[in-house]
Image (cartoon, rainbow over all chains, first blue to last red; front, side, top):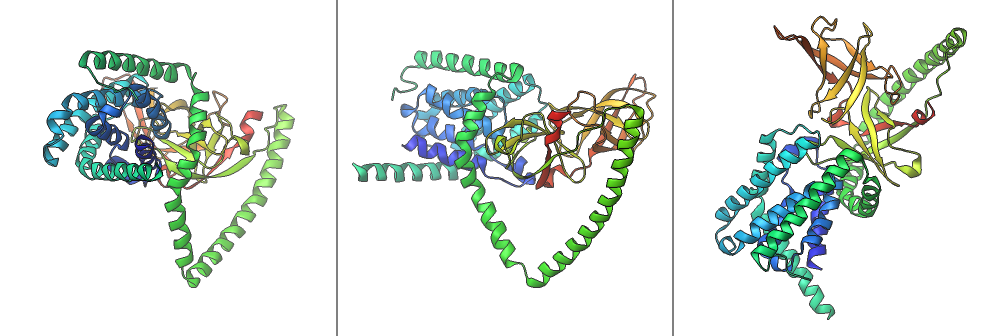
Length: 158
Length: 275
């Protein structure tokens, strides 16, 4: 239930029609979703679920199917390894680590996009990783709240 | 649910499997276009989510519409009535020209073009990926839209439909880095390929001879080669011609005539499949 609710909210955030001028300043909500799962709830996450959940993200962004699956898997793996050491540190340090991980994912994204015929500019990917890292803290708060709310509803039903 | 990373070695194996699967999917989707059905199914399933995401925008438009003053609406109506009169006059001229054109084509023994069937559509969202110039329009298979149909605006070409779903379609704009469009210069009939470079305000003509007769201000239109777009649709205006000393080819930079970043209404040319 928690996975579905956080995933739906992420899809809503991605599907929201932002004005064209904001495109460069938007965080990657899909990355933030995987960051939260990889960092906070990796013990509940399965790779198959991650790959399946990445396909609608590809469709919404209009990228080749599988691109976000690749990036999600890398982010989840890296953050799961780093998770125990950074889960309890303050938000600035946490955001810094998230920025580094997303930067690596962006480099892979740059490589994969070049293979599919796009001509991405790397600084835009860096900017996106930076904005995502800056927004990590409020998004974590949002996902935490959502998870708690979903859990409470589940408990009430039982 | 099985835990993802219970042991590092198992996790590494799973990562390798996921990466291999993803890379294979990327390759199949981008090179062979074999996953269209999967994309269609996912997009159709996402339709309710998209509608919920569009709701705030629709509500704000409605509220803004209600909040507009009576005076402003009357002024707008007057200006629209004037515009309508002008367009009706233009249409009369167009009908005469069409008849003349048809007669000339008949005399020359050239096959007459099929009448255009245009379908109005609204742009619902622009892809949030900065490198993908795709928009979603609110017309799909149920309205007769199909992949490959050109999409135009009042000012010129926008792009083409690349994926059609029951209630919506994805349109690839001509400025997308993967889009190539056969064009010709209106003044000289010089043919070229307009390539998107991933910027909304720019397309480029590459590999043109250094001596090519193109100057800033020239208009580009579709050439009709490739049999996807009818010839003569306005595309872009030349902004800059770069002739680097010692280089055999010139590079031409042009700006699309349609304001791609600000568009809200477009027309899908349904007649293309009858060409």
